[in-house]
Amino acid sequence: MELACNIGTTDYTDEHQVFGGISFPTLRRAVGREPDGTTVPDPAFVTIDIEHVSVESVV
Image (cartoon, rainbow, N blue to C red; front, side):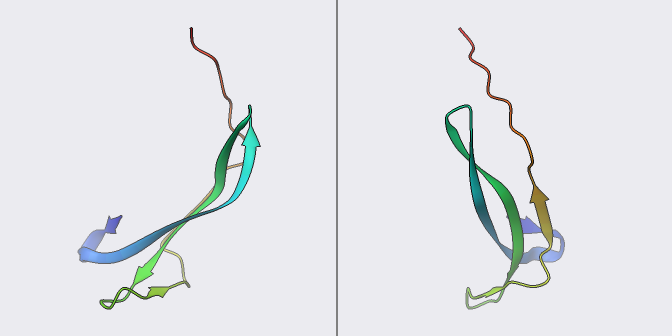
């Protein structure tokens, strides 16, 4: 992921939960990355919390 101004980011997914028999990450964070590749965990540029996932079967 790359945000405006060519700032390097690292994308983390955590807190997996099972919905409909499939595991989904329910927390996604984009944090800064230094030129040497190390991450800057705070503050996160983007945080997405997922509370519910619907899984439907398509035949």
